[in-house]
Length: 78
Image (cartoon, rainbow, N blue to C red; front, top):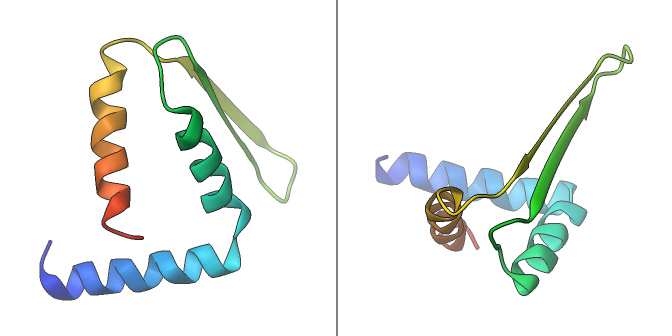
């Protein structure tokens, strides 16, 4: 990612946080407790026409490395 892309990503993240303040607050609350093996993560998407997709995982020891990478990347957008 070049500097221009990083700048645009940072601006987009700032706009997203302003438009959806509950999402970063939710992420911060989860991080305060910390990620751990055995925790469950569930995601649901509902379209305006009523179609819905759901997925969930139970975090394994192998997943922890990826979650730590995501956390490190998120720090660059604050």
